[in-house]
Length: 172
Image (cartoon, rainbow, N blue to C red; front, side):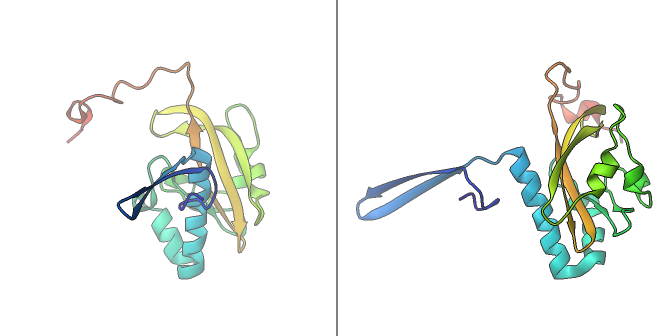
């Protein structure tokens, strides 16, 4: 079992040497498993600390974990947290469509305790380009918790700044 996700796959190697057992583990953390775990961490925080603390944490950059960020919608499907696009706060998620015309907000609003995946086009803040996003969404105690990851587009050149010296792209 992967200790982070409580799911497989994990590989172990064990060796007995001079009466001691040495064990090494290798867990494959896939992006979908990372998104599931990230959402579960948020619902656990909500259960421990309630809504206000959870919103405050995930509505800030402190709540961002790599490319994963959380967005939360209240029981009326209004955004209450989005650290990357704060202008969405207060808007009804059901009104969102992507560039291809897909009613992603309606699909997200269908979230249940069991959760489901929603795949759509969305602006990738890392690349500055629209890309395919896969989001895990659940409705927990009436609140929608959602996070996802972007799938790479093999036909798109990486941005110039990706492997550059940060000083070349830093604004004072």
